[in-house]
Length: 244
Length: 108
Image (cartoon, rainbow over all chains, first blue to last red; front, side):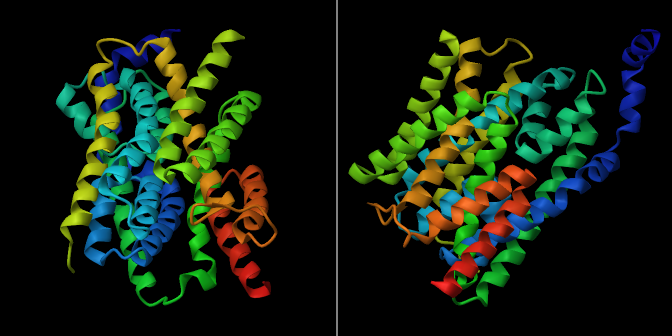
């Protein structure tokens, strides 16, 4: 108990240890995973018709793995900008949860500083930060910047490398690279389900989402299919859970 | 090194709608908390969005319903799914998916 109190009282001192450089180091275990996904994203973006400069811009400004895959896929089939933006909005809505979960640990910072930290929030940096949070009451701002900037630069470099590689692959399908996107979605689906302890309910929601997405896509458009599936299947999950 | 206006518009638009959910909870939730129903609804969004995307990718081709053994995406999805379950690694899942598809294209 005494130790806990001592730790709370010495938060400024603990923050001194959690430097920018410590944040950089804590990011390292995630780098390889994101390097490869970023590389795949770069290849997909290039083969969807984006220039290398556009790949650099999308990885630095949008900075969201699944959203970049989706945008590339939709650009390749000439979807409208509106449809792409709405789809990405729904895909990235989950960041609300990540951001909300981290908010208690950044209460010592002003809203503007929180905005800067949140603007580079990803699934991976969230994972590292929430583990850090398990040890203490507050997370150091400099540490979070170190973590964020390392992940961000790594992502841009990986995308660029993928785009250069995609430049001299004339036929990405031959090497199965077109399956990087569905495989990434399968991975994210499985990971999002096994990280929660609601497997049966999640399977019901997933099956419903697939049926709605496929059904709506055949009649209207694929982006409307994703949006309606997200809204209806999530509402179904919420209602079933409330009932039980 | 060209950047087209259409692509730039898409990048800025998607970035804006991604930025807002990333920063707003961090900026305002130090003051109040998300209502329980909203948190619950949001907790199902990742699963339903990803399931919808997987469904479209593996069951459809150019807007057509496609469930047969000629559908390589569907076949490749099966081992990919099990590798995701087994390894819980995004990297292993993507790499094995790509390799599976490459092998399928060699044989079919």
